[in-house]
Length: 469
Image (cartoon, rainbow, N blue to C red; front, side):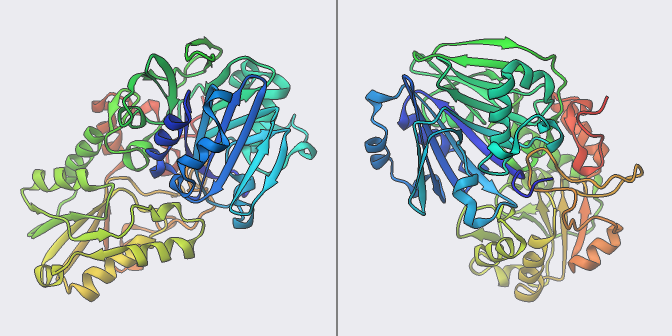
């Protein structure tokens, strides 16, 4: 697997620069390392990419660079890089392009007058790009390879040949419409919305609702959508749906108030908390809390189910997700700098027995900080970390190392805390008691919420490869 293809992102297709900027900002939780915009006019595509968050580039100045009178459609993107080199951050950031003239300013770069530009959420395995000329590529990113595949073979061939994982938007000077493709498996989300009478696309509907738009529907699987200058669209289905939705979008990545695949993320997390409470047997616990911020809803429902007091005990200085750090050192630094006990919490926690709910445990980096805060600083009597996601990165009976190859920063060769360890060994290595919800329990929750277990991709936690029969 290329060191450049592992990423998870958010994308927007809109018809004003303001909407593209505002909506992609509301998807900042999906990536914080780089952002970018492609401006599409009649016979012209111009791209700007910059390092950091969306707000690192001021909207007022973006209007100077992309006057509304010259462009009719905008594609925007946020990305977190996982294995790409930091000195190539902007080159690897989206939008990716074919053709055009590059103007690099260090913290940001332009690509003027591109032939094709694209933004992508997901990850595509290398085997599907054998027909692409590597010498024509500027980067090693799968998104650029998708663009070259599209340019050579067309969107119909892309949707029928490459099963996933992608939601991909493409602007092509040869075509009068911006094209959005969602693969047959639907591993990565994509939604259609409407604002001011014009149709738009984002990764999550929360971006519509926060900006005066409305959700129309999820993008249909195996389907191409064509958006014209006036904001209307048409669609063509090229591949039958074989749904394998990513459970991690619900458990962690998605905004708590998003609706994915017609299902409310908040409701799923609440049900996960209840089911975890039913499965985890702990006695004489004084309080339940959570690792900010994603598991809050699950922790509340866990506490209510158990009849135990719930209250926050940690805070973060910044909303960044340590999971999205580019390497272990960056993730550890992010956690240590960012995660702290609330004021006067040491006195309140001393001698208590506590349960901390977490959304998932990947490498165990967060556990070290939580253990230190609870045992070394707060002097709790007993602490338990409970994850409502089953153990990630295990090697099940088929002998195939698990992880994610479809757009989340959990490649199968990663250093997973759970790999090769029993539950007792995990707790010993982490220095704190660790427990997990069962895979069957999680699948049951999703089934009751509206997604049958067979329609989930659970590869990273021991399930089948999503493209297998």
